[in-house]
Length: 306
Length: 306
Image (cartoon, rainbow over all chains, first blue to last red; front, side):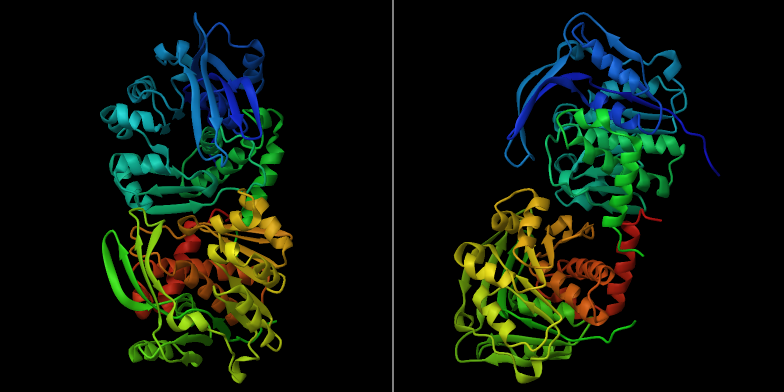
């Protein structure tokens, strides 16, 4: 039975980033998990964004997000400056240092869903304080599928709130070192089993250039990353992975073993485009056709099943 | 057209290992790349082994190898002791320290193929001095497919000999850090392109718990590892991966895009059994049925193509 496409609601940070890598830099570009997620998801489904920016947020970036078909009714502008992050990647691109971080208006962000968002059925809670992520859940009428992400900071600083959140979401995404930290276990399969016991129906462990693993009570799905000859800037890879994933699920309108695997493949492909340029640069010119072409390539380079 | 199954000839080290991990140890057990490879390959095809042991080599281990259907005509016994290695793995099992290494009779190993091996069509040169690996090639009549492995030591100590070898083999296997070192390039795709230019038709980059990548002039194939809840001892994972791979190819009797992908999947599965116990412990009781069952599981957990 075909199911109607749904929209995706995403809550999280909208930022102005400055990024340095061993080969170049991009200063004062659109960033933040929510921006990355929303643009990635917009290739698949309508997106309702919830975030906060300051008076300095560039009108051109607001227009860009709108042109992606992203509903900005939930993007609040308040007195002050937009969240700013300045980071520098190491030679191997797997590690980075934060040179400067100013939360600015994001420090007092309390997500409030506009009335028109409350019926959202596919929802993603990008990294913010776990108790704020939980507050969003209480504003939703009847979500079908809620995903959440976190970072190491909240595993250390708000473990009880994070546990509370995990008992209420369908999907939790986390990278491999965070999974080991949260579970207190370095074996990724054992760590995943422990995190599933905390509540989520699906757990995705992100492994960067090595791909991703999906775990549920009765299933494991393993997928490599798309092999790339050039990684310009890894920023936003995880967020656009999640955006492509949730967008694909919303487009399918239902979460099954088959739709979630396809969604993970789409997330992988969108993330592979993201890292080919600084910030959201590559996604600004990306087309759905290019995504589908690379999905077919990805299927070809991983196929030993036929 | 179906092609007749072929035998596999393997040349390399036969050793007595002592291994310590954070959870246990195994002292004085059968080890060495050639032993691991040969036992793994024997599940798929007849194996002709070339190696050297000392007078202390246990008769029971010689019998075990023979019972696997491995031809030991090329296993020379000479005065002295068998190659011995004693290693200890770190907490995360990805790193190990060599506590003791005694080459013993292996120090003066010069591989000589028995007359009956010289017609071998599938050949694997496990890690030894690259110039000795090259000497084996000169003893072969008309090999169809020759694979070779190496370790970091030879990239540093015998770079010219290794380059010479690479220009003469069909398949080269190497782990990701060795690939970066050999190519002088950390991006794995770029590193692979450079190594392919050194001669081999196929390059497999082994990524341990993250799987493997196959590169050729016109193709990339990416496969994750089989996710395991328990890794007891990683020793021999790479060698049994290669053994399962070459055994599967020899059983197919030909190397095509399809047979090499299936062979990599078989290698992945055999390696996943290897690490479930110390040394060759798991492979001593393993059956071909168990391998095929896990191959089907592996296909199921990696499938998003249907």
